[in-house]
Image 1 (cartoon, rainbow, N blue to C red):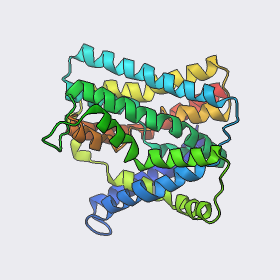
Image 2: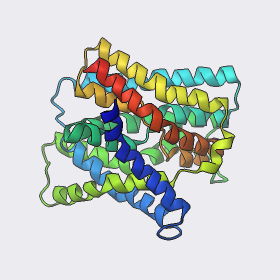
Image 3: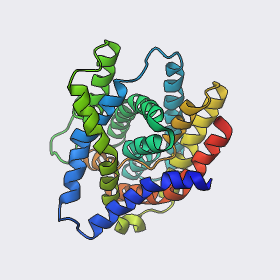
Image 4: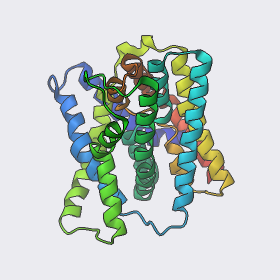
Length: 315
C-alpha cells in the first residue's frame, strides 16, 4: 500500500504544484489558462492519436472490455438519477451531479495508467478512453438537453439537439484524435512517416503539463457550495463506477492489467471540462466547479486505496 501511494504521489504533487502556481500567479497572469488550451488542442490530442494508433484491435478481449466500461457508465447514471429524484434537486443541479458521477478526468487517468503500469497500461487506457469519451459526450449532451431544453446559455437563439451533438463530437479535439488514430490503425496506415514521430514527441510533453494545468484549475473558494449533492455524486464517481467495473471484470473473467486499468476510469476525479458544458447547456456551473475541486482533493485519499483493492482482487 505504501509503495502504491509513492507511485501515485508524483501525479498529485504535479496537481498541487499547478494549484500553487496559479494561486501565486506564477509565472504570470493568464499563463495557466494558455497552457490548458495548448494541452487540450495540441498536446493531449497528440497523445491520444499516438496511443490509439498502436492499439491491437484484433484482440478478442476488446469487445468485452468496451462492454464493461459502458455498462458501468449506464449503472452509474441510473444511480445518479435515482439520487437526484430522492433529493428532489432542480434540473441544473441534477445535471451537474450527473456530470460529476459519470465523467472522468482523462488527463489524470492516462497519467496514472502510465505511472502505475507503463506503456502497456497507457495503451489500454487510451483504448478505454476511445470507448468512453465519445459515449459520455453523446450521453451528457442528450441528457442535459432533455433536462434543460435545447438552448445554450451563451446564445439567445435555441439550439437543436442534432446541432449540439455534432458540435460536441466534431469540435472536440480528443474525440477527433481518437477517431483518426483508430481509423488509420484499422486501415493499416500507421505508423505514419515523420508525423508519428512528431506526435510521439508532443505526447511526451502532454502529461506533466496537463497535470499542472489541471491543478491550476482547482478553485478552493467554491467548496462551500457543495453539500449532500456532492456526497452522492462522489459516491457515484468513487464507489459505484469502480465497483461495477470490478464486479463485471470478475464476472466476465477479465483479470490482470486490463482489469486494473479499467478500474482507474472509476477512481479518478471528474473532468474539469464539465464546468464548460454546465455553462453551455444550463447546468449549475458554480456547483460543478465545487464538485470538480472537492473530487480532485478527495481522490488524493481514495485513489491509492481503490487501486490497492483492485490489485488485491483482480490480479
